[in-house]
Image (tube, rainbow, N blue to C red):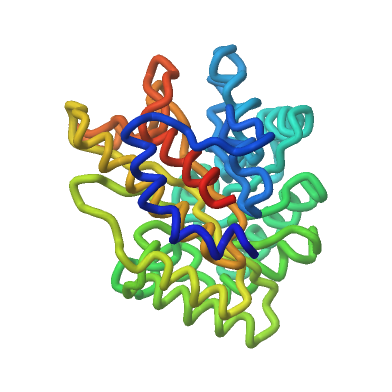
Length: 349
């Protein structure tokens, strides 16, 4: 594919245009939005969506609608929101996002079916037997995926199952059900919607390291067993103070060879405050580096920022003294990072 072959040749130009703020000329193309710049690349450009902001902030809503062709629910598809009481499902907020996406010609990534965080109190505080917990997990996955059948095109089925050293994370699911719960989750999701693409998803797994090695081995094992795993999600929560992994393309390429789709699912690039131009340029480079790897890979299909504006970013509430992690300022003005993303798409045409 020409787009993917030509990316490396234009990286230097992409970074130069970030500094100047100028977008390259593309004959006959509407280049005013990220989704227009991404058109024809084979990679969808997405954002996580804060549903409270979508309802109350008209400017935020307009940017979500115009700039992105893929959306992910930041929180409203997680277990504590979807099934706050056992057997009682609350679809309202998630349905509003799906309806919004359909009205604006967007696809939806589902996030997330199985995780060790943001679970309802009834699930974590009650003492269920392993058999009961297995049935609860099965019912939840099949009910949720079936509800959104045909309306969610990718699911993060199992989220953050490895530690950074490549060992399985100690979770309620692992303790009660053993490692087989991972394969079961994929099988149940596939039964509920055979057309949805099903993903593993984690952070600190963008480059080649112990964690991504563990995911590669797991994906290979599951596929050899006929488990319907279709994708490998790399969250992409980076920080300019740590530098950026240099083996991202090598990592993506080996999943390509395995026949597994890849996606960057939650990209943001935080910095130690205050902001300065040097940090902003480093941030722009970080966003562009992940996108370049995606565009170069044959089976990388989407690139999602985890919120597009600092106005609603999760970062300051979690990382003290850090922030400015998204492509837009709090006042909804595009940063050099925005230009980096747009220009990388344009120059890959």
